Image 1 (cartoon, rainbow, N blue to C red):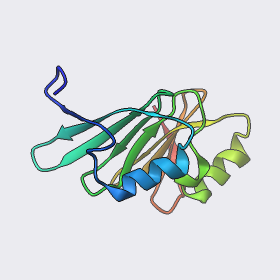
Image 2 (cartoon, helix red, strand yellow; image 1 turned 135 degrees about the horizontal axis):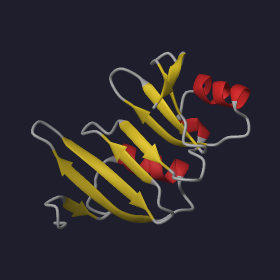
Image 3 (cartoon, helix red, strand yellow; image 1 turned 30 degrees about the horizontal axis):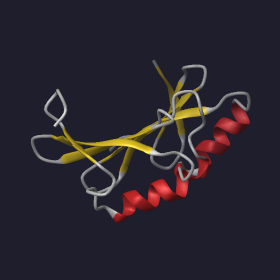
Image 4 (spheres, helix red, strand yellow; image 1 turned 90 degrees about the vertical axis):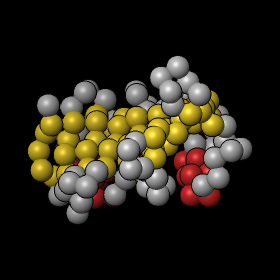
Length: 129
C-alpha cells in the first residue's frame, strides 16, 4: 500500500489482458514503473506509470480514461483519427501530449498548454481553460 492508502501492483499481478495488450502495442520501448489500483466508492480505477513519465488511467472495465505523456506525443492510434487530423490541420506545429475521455466529451492537451474539447463523434467544441 502506498502512503495515501492506495494499493500498488506489479505488472505480474495485474491480470487484465486488454491492459497488457495496450502497453505492448503502444509502449513496447518503455518499462512500467508501477501500477496503482484506486478504490472509489463504487468502482476501481487503475493508474499506470511508465519509466518515461507517461501516466495512463483505465476505469474498472479496462477503458482508457486518460493518458499524459507530458512533453512527448501521445501515440496517434490511441485517439480517433478525426481528432488527430483536426490538430494536424489547425496546429501542425504542436504535439498532442495528453488525451482524456469521459461520458460527455474528449479532450486533448497540446504541447503549448492549450486544451481542445471534442464531442464523442470527434467534432470540435472549443477550447478549455
